[in-house]
Amino acid sequence: MFEVSDLPAPYEMANKHPGVALGDLDGDGDLDILLAWGWGSGVFLNDGSGRFELTDSLDVDGVPLPPGRSAALADLDGDGDLDAHVGTFLGLNDLVLRNDGTGVFAVEEVADSAQNTWSAQVGDLDGDGDLDIITGTFDAPFDPAAIMGGVRGGGPAVFFQNEPGEFVRRNEAIPEAVAGSLTIEAALLDADQDGDLDVFLANDFGPYVVPNALLLNDGSGNFAVAEGCGCSTAMYAMGAGVGDLDDDGVADLYVSNVGPTLVLRGLGDGTYIDVGEATGATIPASTTSMTSWAVEIVDVDRDSCSDILVTYGALGQAGQAILTQLESAEDDWVDGLEQHDALLRGDCEGHFVRDETSGFGSVDRTRALAVGDLNGDLRPDVVTAGKFFLRIFLAGGGCPSGVVVTLQDGIGARVTVEAGGREVTRWMLPGNTASSSAEELTFGLGTLDSADRIVATWPDGSTVVAEDVPSGTRVHLER
Image (cartoon, rainbow, N blue to C red; front, side, top):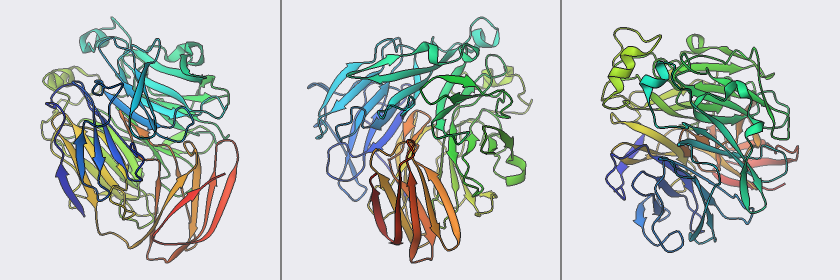
């Protein structure tokens, strides 16, 4: 199903963890790639057909792009083009790269952000109409022995509020109860369906520090821990995918881990139940499926059912030594060097089966994952990055019908497509572990010729409806 190719990296790719983001950086209408990397980041420009070339024509103030570990793209200043957030490490402040619309960037440091950023998610968290940033961090060099020995905690999620011309750190917005979290990803979703964006903290070393936590938003960017959410699992979470796994219109969570993955069904009121066994979606721990990272929930084959993409990759030279010391680790767990990325296919009834034949995945040390239509055929293609590679998966085959929805200022919006007597809901929430997918939503229609209705609802309550949308079209909705 996938045509696979590797891209040349700008630097030797064994340094640090990579981040990948997809978006139109040069204003020509197709999706480009921003790679955040420890020895210097890079941009790959798309020729429109899904073929990419590393370019030095896009720069920051006349010098090469800076090093980083996470990448996110969004219109951070409201001028209509995509800017970038690059999460850094080694005590450096994170960076915002402001785009002039042609891919030439001006750089600014985010004050008080030197906390070893693993992921950055973008959304309007305070309800004022512009995009804020929340990061998952380690606030000190990674020291597993100190963490497991109780010597130190972690680095919490950090909320940076978008103020005119700058991002301002708001420590008081994050509850003290989760201040010691080792948060790999602060995933955004409207967990209680009240119209604002809440935050799910995917926390590493949960049995030793702080378990996963759900932070409910009061609508103005102040958060409280959701007690009794059923989602505060003490695990070694590396990220969380958000999507509707059972077609009930409520956002569910798929949480990666060192060990078995976790599947949480949202009940719509900010509470969850573990449905991994019932759905078949939990991936058991094994030598080839031990350490999972980024997760995306997307209709890969355009049959209208949600599928799940999960990247896997060994922890590294010290990985097995760490694994043998982890609380809850089984005696036979092995952090194998050849771990397989996973595609789980859904059946539209909330059940999933792992597909071993699609051509998706690697047996390398994958970390990052981003999804978007790279070649204009309305199929969701995939980009992954790992410790030694940057890889493209161009999708083919699958069901013939589908539409792609883009939105004006759409991050955080909910989109429902009604077709053939079914309603399928997805959310414009592009961020995941270290990475950011394209700001577009793919809705497969199976063999149908059209969608009856497309309903887009923005976080501020604005709603736009499109009717009788033909298959094979890209729909842009503006409020």
